[in-house]
Amino acid sequence: MDTLVDSGVLIRLTLPGDPAYPEVRRAVRLLKSRGEKLIALTQNIAEFWNVCTRPAAVRGGYGLSVKDTARKLGLIENLVEIRPDSLAVFQEWKRLVVLHSVKGVQVHDARLVAGMTVYGIATLLTFNGADFKRYAGITIVRPLDVQ
Image 1 (tube, rainbow, N blue to C red):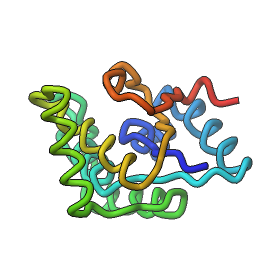
Image 2 (image 1 turned 90 degrees about the vertical axis):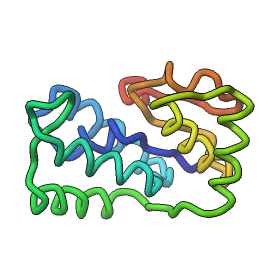
Image 3 (image 1 turned 90 degrees about the horizontal axis):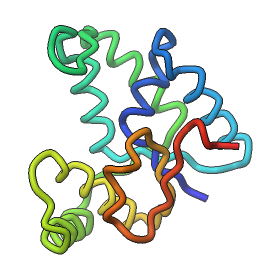
Image 4 (image 1 turned 180 degrees about the horizontal axis):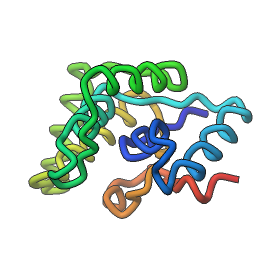
């Protein structure tokens, strides 16, 4: 089974000092040991880069250098398969934002759901399950709940 790994999970997976690191690492190990394919979309990678390189003084930023962020991205690339955007993802995103009247920052979540739909991914590993409740057919799994 394929599982999309949300950006917040990817970030914490590369930051051993983060309080959620042990929980995320355990969840990823369990999923991989069961033969599940972990997927990230280019959208996740852009969000990862944004948060890692955003100044620490700015909301949610980690203030990492480009060099450190690139190294951490290399770790992610060894753990997950990264799938690209496509015209089909765009068309599904457009359908979703209109159907669900999505506004503001939530358009990014709709883009992830569009990618999941196009790539046939039903499960999302995330800390932010509430952000995806409006979308039918998605199974939300928190890292803590992976058994």
